[in-house]
Length: 339
Image 1 (cartoon, rainbow, N blue to C red):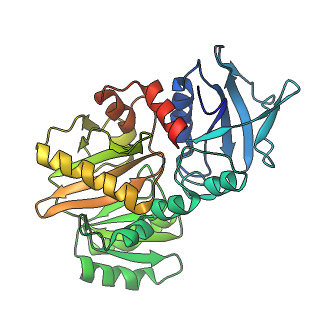
Image 2: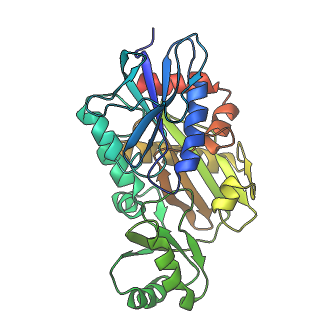
Protein backbone atom coordinates (compact mmCIF):
# COMPACT_ATOMS: atom_id res chain seq x y z
CA UNK A 1 0.00 0.00 0.00
CA UNK A 2 1.28 3.47 -0.88
CA UNK A 3 2.64 5.65 1.93
CA UNK A 4 0.93 8.75 0.50
CA UNK A 5 -2.36 9.51 -1.20
CA UNK A 6 -2.18 13.08 -2.50
CA UNK A 7 1.02 14.01 -4.34
CA UNK A 8 1.62 17.62 -5.36
CA UNK A 9 4.02 18.08 -8.27
CA UNK A 10 5.45 21.60 -8.04
CA UNK A 11 6.87 23.15 -11.21
CA UNK A 12 7.60 26.54 -12.73
CA UNK A 13 10.20 28.70 -10.98
CA UNK A 14 11.46 32.24 -10.44
CA UNK A 15 14.47 31.68 -12.71
CA UNK A 16 15.27 31.52 -16.42
CA UNK A 17 14.62 27.78 -16.26
CA UNK A 18 10.91 28.09 -15.54
CA UNK A 19 9.74 26.83 -18.94
CA UNK A 20 12.03 23.78 -18.79
CA UNK A 21 10.71 23.20 -15.27
CA UNK A 22 7.12 23.16 -16.57
CA UNK A 23 7.99 20.51 -19.14
CA UNK A 24 9.73 18.43 -16.49
CA UNK A 25 6.85 18.80 -14.06
CA UNK A 26 4.15 17.95 -16.58
CA UNK A 27 6.07 14.86 -17.70
CA UNK A 28 6.63 13.73 -14.11
CA UNK A 29 2.97 14.25 -13.17
CA UNK A 30 1.84 12.27 -16.22
CA UNK A 31 4.03 9.30 -15.25
CA UNK A 32 3.18 9.02 -11.55
CA UNK A 33 1.18 5.86 -10.90
CA UNK A 34 -2.42 6.65 -11.78
CA UNK A 35 -3.74 3.73 -9.71
CA UNK A 36 -1.97 4.60 -6.44
CA UNK A 37 -1.92 8.37 -6.13
CA UNK A 38 -4.03 11.48 -6.54
CA UNK A 39 -1.76 13.85 -8.46
CA UNK A 40 -2.04 17.65 -8.26
CA UNK A 41 -0.02 19.91 -10.55
CA UNK A 42 1.01 23.22 -9.00
CA UNK A 43 2.47 26.02 -11.08
CA UNK A 44 4.53 28.20 -8.75
CA UNK A 45 6.20 31.39 -9.92
CA UNK A 46 7.04 34.60 -8.01
CA UNK A 47 4.89 33.69 -5.03
CA UNK A 48 1.77 32.78 -7.02
CA UNK A 49 1.02 29.08 -6.48
CA UNK A 50 -1.95 27.79 -8.44
CA UNK A 51 -3.46 24.38 -9.08
CA UNK A 52 -3.38 23.98 -12.86
CA UNK A 53 -4.49 20.34 -13.12
CA UNK A 54 -5.38 17.32 -11.05
CA UNK A 55 -5.84 13.61 -11.58
CA UNK A 56 -7.56 11.50 -8.97
CA UNK A 57 -6.50 7.86 -8.80
CA UNK A 58 -8.21 5.80 -11.52
CA UNK A 59 -9.57 8.98 -13.14
CA UNK A 60 -8.82 11.29 -16.04
CA UNK A 61 -6.64 14.39 -15.72
CA UNK A 62 -8.64 17.58 -15.23
CA UNK A 63 -7.06 20.91 -16.23
CA UNK A 64 -8.25 24.19 -14.75
CA UNK A 65 -8.62 27.12 -17.18
CA UNK A 66 -6.61 30.27 -16.56
CA UNK A 67 -8.59 32.53 -14.27
CA UNK A 68 -10.26 29.58 -12.56
CA UNK A 69 -7.15 27.93 -11.09
CA UNK A 70 -7.49 27.41 -7.33
CA UNK A 71 -4.81 29.16 -5.31
CA UNK A 72 -2.69 27.11 -2.93
CA UNK A 73 -2.99 28.07 0.73
CA UNK A 74 0.66 28.30 1.74
CA UNK A 75 -0.17 28.40 5.45
CA UNK A 76 -0.72 24.63 5.41
CA UNK A 77 0.04 23.60 1.79
CA UNK A 78 -3.54 22.88 0.81
CA UNK A 79 -6.08 23.88 -1.84
CA UNK A 80 -9.86 24.17 -2.06
CA UNK A 81 -11.37 22.29 -5.02
CA UNK A 82 -15.14 22.41 -5.51
CA UNK A 83 -15.68 23.05 -1.81
CA UNK A 84 -13.30 20.26 -0.70
CA UNK A 85 -10.09 21.08 1.11
CA UNK A 86 -7.19 18.99 -0.19
CA UNK A 87 -4.12 18.84 2.05
CA UNK A 88 -1.16 17.43 0.18
CA UNK A 89 0.64 14.44 1.72
CA UNK A 90 3.80 14.65 -0.38
CA UNK A 91 5.53 17.18 -2.62
CA UNK A 92 7.38 16.13 -5.75
CA UNK A 93 9.65 19.10 -6.48
CA UNK A 94 10.31 19.76 -10.17
CA UNK A 95 11.36 23.41 -9.91
CA UNK A 96 14.63 24.04 -11.75
CA UNK A 97 16.34 27.09 -10.31
CA UNK A 98 14.91 29.23 -7.49
CA UNK A 99 13.29 28.42 -5.13
CA UNK A 100 13.21 24.65 -5.78
CA UNK A 101 16.98 24.25 -6.12
CA UNK A 102 18.09 26.92 -3.67
CA UNK A 103 16.69 25.22 -0.55
CA UNK A 104 13.92 27.76 0.03
CA UNK A 105 11.10 25.48 -1.10
CA UNK A 106 12.54 22.54 0.84
CA UNK A 107 12.79 24.72 3.96
CA UNK A 108 9.14 25.74 3.63
CA UNK A 109 8.00 22.12 3.28
CA UNK A 110 10.21 20.95 6.14
CA UNK A 111 8.80 23.61 8.47
CA UNK A 112 5.33 22.25 7.68
CA UNK A 113 6.64 18.66 8.12
CA UNK A 114 5.59 17.72 4.59
CA UNK A 115 7.72 14.97 3.02
CA UNK A 116 9.23 15.82 -0.35
CA UNK A 117 11.27 14.22 -3.13
CA UNK A 118 14.39 16.35 -2.83
CA UNK A 119 17.45 16.75 -0.67
CA UNK A 120 17.11 18.65 2.60
CA UNK A 121 17.02 22.44 2.55
CA UNK A 122 20.62 22.66 3.77
CA UNK A 123 22.03 20.11 1.32
CA UNK A 124 20.10 21.69 -1.55
CA UNK A 125 21.49 25.13 -0.74
CA UNK A 126 25.07 23.85 -0.59
CA UNK A 127 24.88 21.56 -3.61
CA UNK A 128 23.13 24.01 -5.95
CA UNK A 129 25.84 26.64 -5.52
CA UNK A 130 28.74 25.46 -7.67
CA UNK A 131 31.42 27.12 -5.57
CA UNK A 132 29.98 25.95 -2.23
CA UNK A 133 29.59 22.41 -3.53
CA UNK A 134 33.17 22.30 -4.76
CA UNK A 135 34.33 23.64 -1.39
CA UNK A 136 32.59 20.72 0.33
CA UNK A 137 34.41 18.29 -1.94
CA UNK A 138 37.91 19.79 -1.87
CA UNK A 139 39.15 17.27 0.71
CA UNK A 140 37.70 14.25 -1.15
CA UNK A 141 40.61 12.21 -2.51
CA UNK A 142 38.50 10.27 -5.03
CA UNK A 143 37.68 13.15 -7.39
CA UNK A 144 39.48 16.06 -9.06
CA UNK A 145 38.23 19.65 -9.20
CA UNK A 146 39.14 22.21 -11.86
CA UNK A 147 41.17 25.16 -10.53
CA UNK A 148 38.86 28.14 -10.05
CA UNK A 149 38.43 31.72 -8.94
CA UNK A 150 35.40 33.29 -7.27
CA UNK A 151 33.99 36.78 -7.78
CA UNK A 152 31.00 38.58 -6.30
CA UNK A 153 28.94 41.32 -7.95
CA UNK A 154 30.35 44.68 -6.85
CA UNK A 155 33.97 43.49 -6.93
CA UNK A 156 36.44 45.06 -9.35
CA UNK A 157 35.79 42.83 -12.37
CA UNK A 158 38.69 44.20 -14.42
CA UNK A 159 41.24 43.57 -11.66
CA UNK A 160 39.76 40.16 -10.89
CA UNK A 161 39.87 39.16 -14.56
CA UNK A 162 43.55 39.98 -14.82
CA UNK A 163 44.38 37.89 -11.73
CA UNK A 164 42.12 35.02 -12.88
CA UNK A 165 43.92 34.75 -16.22
CA UNK A 166 47.31 34.81 -14.46
CA UNK A 167 46.15 32.05 -12.08
CA UNK A 168 44.09 29.84 -14.39
CA UNK A 169 45.35 30.51 -17.89
CA UNK A 170 43.01 30.27 -20.88
CA UNK A 171 40.53 29.06 -21.96
CA UNK A 172 38.21 29.25 -18.96
CA UNK A 173 34.55 28.68 -18.29
CA UNK A 174 32.60 31.48 -16.62
CA UNK A 175 29.54 30.31 -14.70
CA UNK A 176 26.94 31.80 -12.36
CA UNK A 177 27.37 29.80 -9.16
CA UNK A 178 23.61 29.26 -8.79
CA UNK A 179 22.00 28.69 -12.17
CA UNK A 180 21.22 25.72 -14.39
CA UNK A 181 20.47 24.76 -17.99
CA UNK A 182 23.72 26.55 -18.96
CA UNK A 183 22.13 29.98 -18.56
CA UNK A 184 24.78 32.67 -18.15
CA UNK A 185 27.72 30.38 -18.99
CA UNK A 186 30.48 31.34 -21.43
CA UNK A 187 33.72 29.80 -22.61
CA UNK A 188 36.41 32.46 -22.87
CA UNK A 189 39.53 32.17 -25.03
CA UNK A 190 40.82 35.77 -24.97
CA UNK A 191 41.68 37.79 -21.84
CA UNK A 192 39.90 40.91 -23.12
CA UNK A 193 36.61 38.95 -23.29
CA UNK A 194 36.61 37.80 -19.67
CA UNK A 195 35.12 40.92 -17.99
CA UNK A 196 32.13 40.90 -20.36
CA UNK A 197 31.58 37.18 -19.76
CA UNK A 198 31.58 37.75 -16.00
CA UNK A 199 29.07 40.58 -16.31
CA UNK A 200 26.90 38.34 -18.49
CA UNK A 201 27.02 35.65 -15.78
CA UNK A 202 25.93 38.25 -13.22
CA UNK A 203 22.60 38.52 -15.08
CA UNK A 204 21.77 35.10 -13.55
CA UNK A 205 23.02 35.75 -10.01
CA UNK A 206 25.33 37.79 -7.77
CA UNK A 207 28.23 35.31 -7.60
CA UNK A 208 30.33 33.83 -10.39
CA UNK A 209 32.96 31.11 -10.63
CA UNK A 210 35.68 31.09 -13.29
CA UNK A 211 37.16 27.63 -13.93
CA UNK A 212 40.04 26.31 -15.98
CA UNK A 213 38.78 24.49 -19.07
CA UNK A 214 39.92 20.91 -18.54
CA UNK A 215 41.00 18.95 -21.67
CA UNK A 216 38.05 16.65 -22.22
CA UNK A 217 38.24 13.02 -23.32
CA UNK A 218 34.66 12.23 -22.28
CA UNK A 219 31.83 14.37 -20.89
CA UNK A 220 29.85 12.07 -18.63
CA UNK A 221 26.84 12.20 -16.35
CA UNK A 222 25.36 9.75 -13.86
CA UNK A 223 22.20 9.86 -11.72
CA UNK A 224 21.99 8.39 -8.24
CA UNK A 225 19.03 7.66 -5.99
CA UNK A 226 18.03 5.77 -2.84
CA UNK A 227 16.10 2.64 -3.77
CA UNK A 228 14.80 1.85 -0.29
CA UNK A 229 17.77 -0.31 0.68
CA UNK A 230 20.88 1.31 -0.71
CA UNK A 231 22.19 4.15 -2.87
CA UNK A 232 21.98 3.05 -6.51
CA UNK A 233 23.52 4.48 -9.67
CA UNK A 234 21.80 4.52 -13.05
CA UNK A 235 23.68 3.88 -16.33
CA UNK A 236 26.27 6.50 -17.31
CA UNK A 237 25.61 8.78 -20.31
CA UNK A 238 28.30 10.27 -22.54
CA UNK A 239 27.45 13.65 -24.05
CA UNK A 240 28.81 14.42 -27.51
CA UNK A 241 28.10 18.08 -28.19
CA UNK A 242 28.13 19.74 -31.62
CA UNK A 243 28.73 23.13 -30.00
CA UNK A 244 32.00 22.23 -28.28
CA UNK A 245 30.44 22.01 -24.80
CA UNK A 246 27.04 21.17 -23.31
CA UNK A 247 25.41 24.61 -23.63
CA UNK A 248 21.68 25.44 -23.87
CA UNK A 249 21.48 24.64 -27.60
CA UNK A 250 23.19 21.31 -27.04
CA UNK A 251 20.84 20.47 -24.17
CA UNK A 252 17.50 21.55 -25.60
CA UNK A 253 17.81 22.31 -29.31
CA UNK A 254 19.25 19.08 -30.61
CA UNK A 255 22.90 20.10 -30.93
CA UNK A 256 24.23 17.08 -29.07
CA UNK A 257 24.15 13.30 -29.05
CA UNK A 258 23.66 11.48 -25.77
CA UNK A 259 24.99 7.92 -25.74
CA UNK A 260 23.27 5.76 -23.15
CA UNK A 261 24.76 3.59 -21.86
CA UNK A 262 28.04 5.38 -22.51
CA UNK A 263 30.40 3.47 -24.81
CA UNK A 264 33.34 3.79 -22.48
CA UNK A 265 35.62 1.23 -20.79
CA UNK A 266 33.92 -0.72 -18.01
CA UNK A 267 36.52 0.50 -15.53
CA UNK A 268 35.67 4.15 -16.26
CA UNK A 269 31.94 3.44 -16.08
CA UNK A 270 32.28 1.69 -12.73
CA UNK A 271 34.45 4.48 -11.39
CA UNK A 272 31.93 7.18 -12.38
CA UNK A 273 29.09 5.26 -10.73
CA UNK A 274 31.07 4.65 -7.55
CA UNK A 275 32.22 8.28 -7.33
CA UNK A 276 28.62 9.43 -7.83
CA UNK A 277 27.42 7.28 -4.94
CA UNK A 278 30.23 8.54 -2.72
CA UNK A 279 29.40 12.17 -3.49
CA UNK A 280 25.70 11.45 -2.80
CA UNK A 281 26.60 10.12 0.65
CA UNK A 282 29.28 12.77 1.30
CA UNK A 283 26.83 15.62 0.70
CA UNK A 284 23.94 13.86 2.45
CA UNK A 285 21.70 13.77 -0.63
CA UNK A 286 18.19 12.36 -0.74
CA UNK A 287 15.88 11.37 -3.56
CA UNK A 288 17.26 11.59 -7.11
CA UNK A 289 20.27 13.69 -8.12
CA UNK A 290 22.58 13.75 -11.14
CA UNK A 291 26.34 14.42 -11.21
CA UNK A 292 28.30 15.73 -14.21
CA UNK A 293 31.96 15.00 -14.95
CA UNK A 294 34.83 15.48 -17.36
CA UNK A 295 37.12 12.52 -17.94
CA UNK A 296 40.55 13.99 -18.71
CA UNK A 297 43.99 12.48 -19.36
CA UNK A 298 44.93 13.00 -15.69
CA UNK A 299 41.70 11.75 -14.10
CA UNK A 300 38.00 12.40 -13.52
CA UNK A 301 36.90 15.96 -12.76
CA UNK A 302 33.65 16.74 -10.96
CA UNK A 303 31.62 19.56 -12.54
CA UNK A 304 28.40 19.90 -10.56
CA UNK A 305 25.44 18.25 -8.86
CA UNK A 306 21.98 18.63 -10.35
CA UNK A 307 19.63 18.53 -7.37
CA UNK A 308 16.47 18.63 -9.53
CA UNK A 309 17.57 17.00 -12.81
CA UNK A 310 15.46 17.49 -15.92
CA UNK A 311 12.59 15.05 -16.36
CA UNK A 312 11.19 15.74 -19.81
CA UNK A 313 10.76 12.78 -22.15
CA UNK A 314 14.05 13.77 -23.85
CA UNK A 315 15.98 14.49 -20.64
CA UNK A 316 19.04 12.58 -19.51
CA UNK A 317 17.60 10.85 -16.45
CA UNK A 318 14.60 9.24 -18.22
CA UNK A 319 17.08 7.89 -20.79
CA UNK A 320 19.13 6.38 -17.96
CA UNK A 321 16.02 4.86 -16.38
CA UNK A 322 14.96 3.27 -19.66
CA UNK A 323 18.49 1.97 -20.28
CA UNK A 324 18.40 0.36 -16.83
CA UNK A 325 15.25 -1.51 -17.83
CA UNK A 326 13.11 0.26 -15.23
CA UNK A 327 9.67 1.65 -16.01
CA UNK A 328 9.42 5.41 -15.43
CA UNK A 329 6.26 4.96 -13.34
CA UNK A 330 7.89 2.32 -11.14
CA UNK A 331 10.96 4.51 -10.75
CA UNK A 332 8.90 7.52 -9.64
CA UNK A 333 7.06 5.31 -7.14
CA UNK A 334 10.45 4.30 -5.71
CA UNK A 335 11.43 7.95 -5.29
CA UNK A 336 8.09 8.90 -3.70
CA UNK A 337 8.03 5.97 -1.29
CA UNK A 338 11.68 6.28 -0.21
CA UNK A 339 12.36 10.02 -0.03
